[in-house]
Amino acid sequence: MIVAAEGRRRFILVRWAILTKMGRSLALFGVWSRRHPVAPKRIAILGSTGSIGQQSLEVISATPDLCACALAAGCNWKLLAEQAKRFRPAIVAMSDEQAAGRLCPLLPAGVELLTGPEAMTELVRRSRPDVVLSGVVGSAGLAPTLAAIEVGATLAMANKETLVMAGAIVMPAARKAGVPVLPVDSEHSAIFQCLAAGKRQEVARVVITASGGALRDWDGERAEQATVEEALDHPTWRMGRKITIDSATLINKALEIIEAHWLFGLAAEQIQVVLHPQSIVHSYVEFRDGSVIAQMGPPDMMLPIAYALTYPDRLERRTPPLDLPAVGALTFSAPDGRFARAVKLGYQAVTRGGLTGAVLNAANEAAVQAFLDKRIRFGQILPLVEDVLNQPPPASAVTLEAILATDRWARARLEEGIVAAGPVTAAKASRP
Image (tube, rainbow, N blue to C red; front, side, top):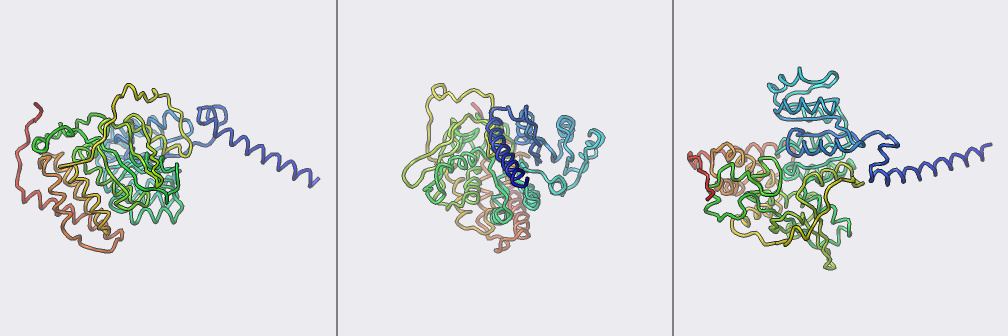
């Protein structure tokens, strides 16, 4: 009887393993979730009302094996109310308390509301999701990212600023906790996918591509006077305001150099940037034998978002195939002029180490916001950031407290630079 029971148990286990493997294969074709219901992967989205957050919810809406268990936003209470009604998360968070007051009566019954500056962090701790997708802008993503590591949630990182300012803390903490860190940035998702073609020690270099942003065809003198509206008019990507301005200055590539350094353990000399206006090749990796592996696709953030949320599987998406003959020529060039000057900041931060990334991130955030508020000209962003980066930071040891203090210090120095430069007259539209 014991032998027979043991044999039957083994048969059941083997049969379960086979069916599980079949289910994973069927899931790629959208079959498993319909015929064999399983517990969906629970996703917490930080920045659900932003560009990345909205596109992430589109992916979740189209994928039965995913659910939005928690949503966090800054001040867009109307959109968060709509999202809560549609996706019925257990918890929502809004950092702006006045906006939260307007949101509260619109929430469906049973949806808990957290408010205040620590609301996102508390949301992560209380919801304990399977995946935290960080789509918030800037340094606001740091505390909830560390909370995600505490609860053991997989990190899907669209917030590059967190790694730029605190990669020295975030990555070791994630490794110690056994928490996967999956890049959502299209360029770093591309590198992540390309690295599967070889061993990490076999990598000679990675090449990050850059669209060049809204002003890529403008000469330096004309670009200096670009209006906010002109700098936000990106020709290929649909993104938030801050990252769109970063794309126009190309400081986004400086930040991405630092992000690649922390994500993949690469030295500064192993990371290069090239301009690629078609935005079809998102990055490529060269191995030591000379082989080059590139990741290609249309300029659509839904692709890297879906890859991160469904990893290690690939979601079947009903999208038109990439038609390279229709795209035509793919062109590449080295950054020069103001673009080379912006990219250089990333290499400086990696080489200097310490708190330099925190300085660069904070100074750039403050400068971009000043430009969006029309307090400075577009052409002032890069010089103001350079000036702050060239000042010695207030501390040397890399701790969470030092990073936060450096963030405040860099913003204050940037503001001093704006005041010293004097008021500016709003630039007139400079298109011909």
